Image (cartoon, rainbow, N blue to C red; front, side, top):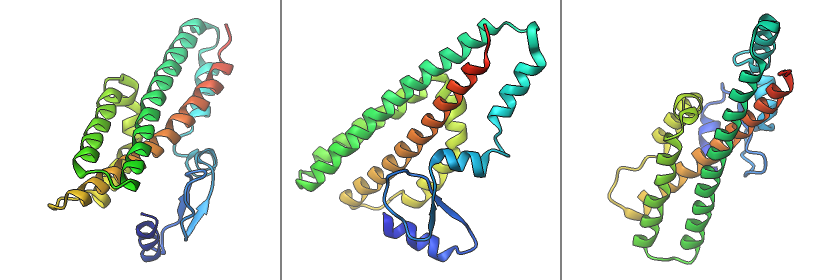
Length: 194
């Protein structure tokens, strides 16, 4: 997978690539930053969440029900915690598949694990905050990953490796997004006065 990313980067020299995996593999041709740095340095102008919340609280002053806002933020925090737990379970399952591959277990067993891991995406889609917000922010990433790694051939092992790669990339990206949203929510709660 590392080699594929490096080939893409090498063939697209007009694009600046940032590696924000925070502990992932070093990919040649990328600038290393934390996810928070990327959001603050590269995406803050496009998605200025802190400014939105600060303006909201400043403009609504005493006329707004801060307790209701705090309850809404706290509810969203619980939903993010639930999404994090589901996604972490998927990551644990992916590590299990890696062990199966290392032990050269049967393709059938590994296929069953991949199918089982897809249930976590279904669980995530049951959460409104995922379906209506997180998935929206990650839509471009999903499309790029699916277009790059989707395998439509007959080789079962290649199909498994493709599915595993897609699930790994999406899971770790989702983990980064959830961490960012959790941090933003904590900061938002500090802005709310009861």
